[in-house]
Length: 84
Image (cartoon, rainbow, N blue to C red):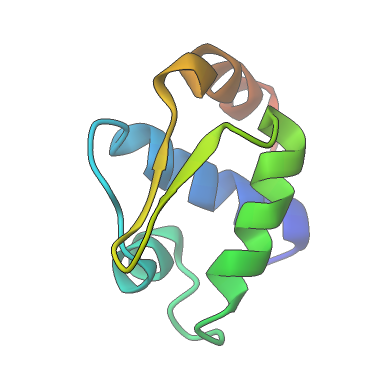
């Protein structure tokens, strides 16, 4: 799975769960990254933030992440533009 697919998978999980905080383990499992290092989700999130903007992903300390409501339209548009 290359970088673009990993970012798309993480973005899809955040969009699917856009009204709640998603922890690292759940995010990794749902995005298909569970076999990679714990920090892989963090680095993929950096790429997602680059695509959507720095305030697009909210970090909830000691809990996980959620996508900011204002970032949803662009996130959905990006997901639609990815090709497998």
